[in-house]
Length: 257
Image 1: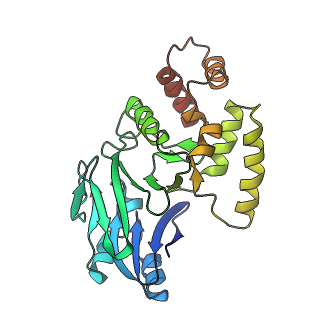
Image 2: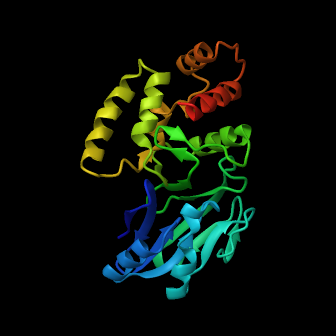
């Protein structure tokens, strides 16, 4: 049996630990100490570390973990991360035998130039996507281009609808607030806000979300839909001809929200 546990780190990061009774995989350990505590408390052996991109709040714990555990560190081939032992790229397959887990690597640049995601479908469809797709939102474009981010989100949205999405930050309520500003007549957003507020009042994560849900509430995945197009054009007072144009202005809107 596999479990996934979220470790809260810094202000709003999630470090994901996938484990069975004996072994664990850690995704984006920005800090080591709470990971070490969890592993020791639950008598787990670290079998692998998965890194989505080079930012320190996703990699900062690697060196300390490697002092205690002999584990491979998978990370993006196109980014310089000194602790990565197994650089991976689009289409690579990662087989983690101790956990009976397989992941496919997806290149999803935009937030950073070499950002990757890990998609696994055995036994449950799961996506670990770092800072690219968030619940009801998407990551900022720091190093890549807006066009790259748009295409990366499109790639992720073509995965099966029942895919569970594990992003790396608790941004959901803020993202819903923005989405309701863009799409005020969407009843699913109003319902979602109530549900997510209740979870956060109990300090329960709003993650994972699902791709099926995101396709109904996330404005960044709906830039070809009339209600989003009209809202963005009204906000910018521009004639925008393509979904990419809409996405570009929507991301700028969110940057200044």
